[in-house]
Length: 376
Image 1 (spheres, rainbow, N blue to C red):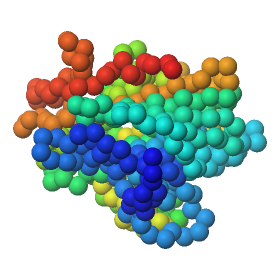
Image 2: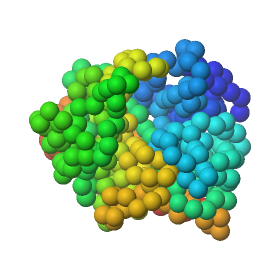
Image 3: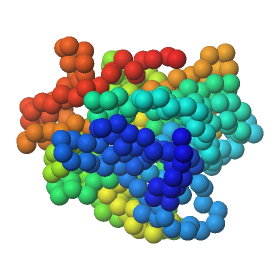
Image 4: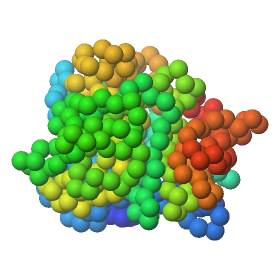
């Protein structure tokens, strides 16, 4: 498969009648991804506004490629080394050069040989004809030890009326326990550091008020990060972003026993240092992870407030058995009056899922849910 330059990055492109997608060679970022709904195409994902600019020296490759969704390992900043391992932000999987292995009519296989913790990661991206769903499987082999990891989907919301965000039931939520941004360096946050919450629509702000994280865009000029501990007793967990003004819903499905938490990175112009310069706005990371917020390997591997509460913050990798991480992203067209997703349940015939809104409207989507539980 040949590469071509797409939005400043050498990328592999592949498609079905319903989806057009690209994967960057540097960092394996999946984007842009366009979905066909009826006669129109939508692109729900973010693309860094500096994608085709020459950036200052010293920035990680991650920031050059940043778009769509990318697989992070170790997930987080990784500012602190762990047992001699010093990983780049969000790991080699989002910064290093991937190799194309093979492609078929529906599946595309890429690989990466890691160097900081030696091993191999195989990335499989599958598009099923007739579906507006993207299936990703990452197979981690040859490594041992604890590892935080996860998917880092970033969406952009520019539609009039904005979007509504919801998730499956979670055990608890918390704002990042240390300041996410530093005003002395040109970064600003709105939410109360370390505040806990039980519902997205009532999250404490630093000024004493309450923020509603189910509505976006909001809180212009701020960057914030929150984590929700998923309910591992659910058959699967989900996160959904509904855009009534453009009549579609984006949703992601995961196995909550593999990806234990959901992280929201709310990026709305709160970073005034390079390359952000206050211009990354109306973007939100809806990220499915097993990690200690966004701190990285060292803080996730040691005892911390989350794993003390029974929320694992790493997966245990073993060279004797590959670790498999499966993830589904999909979109569906919604009818007038479909406001915010209340539930995602299996269709009775097993061919997909039914999304039900708080207003009582329903929409079906063809999705192969058993994919989430593949172990090879």
